[in-house]
Amino acid sequence: MKKALITGVTGQDGSYLAEFLLEKGYEVHGIKRRASSFNTQRIDHIFQDPHTSNARLKLHYGDLTDSSNLTRILQEVQPDEVYNLGAQSHVAVSFESPEYTADVDATGALRLLEAIRFLGLEKTTRFYQASTSELYGLVQETPQTETTPFHPRSPYAVAKMYAYWITVNYREAYGMYACNGILFNHESPRRGETFVTRKITRGLANIAQGLEPCLYMGNIDALRDWGHAKDYVRMQWMMLQQDEPDDFVIATGVQYSVRQFIEWSAEELGVKIRFEGEGLEEIGIVDAIEGDDAPALSVGDVIVRIDPRYFRPAEVETLLGDPAKAKTKLGWTPEITVQEMCAEMVANDLKDSRRNRLLREHGLELPVSTES
Ligand code: NDP
Ligand code: GDR
Image (cartoon, rainbow, N blue to C red):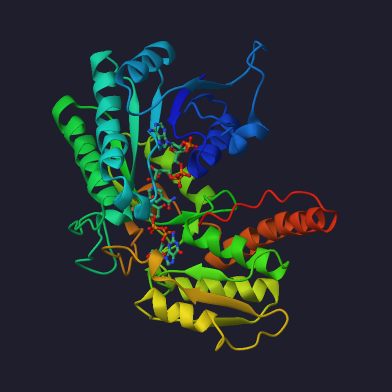
């Protein structure tokens, strides 16, 4: 039985990858962080009681900032494949916590690679690094391929650039089977609530159910190449099954704006949408629209207000990937369209919003977080 170790198993991709590998018959080890409250919601449905002898999903406490912990887990598990998906993965947050982001996202990858080497596993353990389209940042050519030059635009992207190159370096220096998947944005109902697609589907579902007054957004003209996380984790596994290690762009090759994603979500919900404060650069102007001059609302309308709080110090305006190499060399094609994914996300969030509305109607506390 093959053994895989996943960092970031409690995240969006980690949960889908764990499911996928369990179905393939792997023994799956995941590293989870100690938190003051439960953080395993995304994997609770595949949890296996560790007291049973045939449990194939095993969780270990750990952190990418802790070398000794990573080395001990690797020594204990002796995995055939390591998937480094753990990260402080929010671009805007990386401007607030740049040093922590570097420690986890850049040095974390080095710690894992070095632990593999230190334990003498470099010829037996295959390594996948979760690289990102954010490396392209200020794009030098469109569409972006494996040879497009990088120009990172955030502390997150700069940290990921180190992780990209240290992965290449360990492959070249020590002959390790180490690959970078340069993944473009991928989403799902399990996407973190503060990333733009989930913020939209969750926010609009809440508004449609009368739970929130409006949705505050940043740069809705940003263009992204969005795919479904399920399609993308399949590709992460495929990359480690080749004869030779290599780096691959994973994308759909189609690009849409954030505004378009809002419009699809509204259509799914059957509500009208009105944008306010668009392009305004100062919060004061947005406040004025919220005051006495605010236009009357019709029932069912959704107001999307542009709030400069969500603008980033340096923005990645446009990303569009060319997955030709993955298609030709690995035979990979995405199966779920962005519109199908949007519909799935809206349906999922609407179910939660309806439940929360019912709870409110019966005078029960709402577990709705307003963090965005
Ligand atoms: P998520 O933010 O959903 O998950 C990140 C995971 O990393 C969580 O399990 C989180 O734990 C864990 N983590 C955070 N900090 C640490 C730490 N210090 N030590 C150990 N684990 C930690 O990300 P995604 O699943 O969306 O993405 C997976 C990977 O792919 C990330 O590396 C991301 O940067 C990269 N990526 C993602 C893309 C996307 O569009 N989704 C595109 C390209 C790359 P906890 O649950 O406790 O917070
Ligand atoms: P991104 O994803 O930064 O591309 O990183 P995100 O969904 O956060 O933003 C996409 C675009 O939408 C714009 N935007 C907003 N974003 C957020 N989060 N909230 C808003 O209110 C908002 N309004 C507009 C952003 O400015 C941006 O242009 C994701 C992460 O998963 C990374 O880990 C990964 O590496 C890349 O995708 C590929």
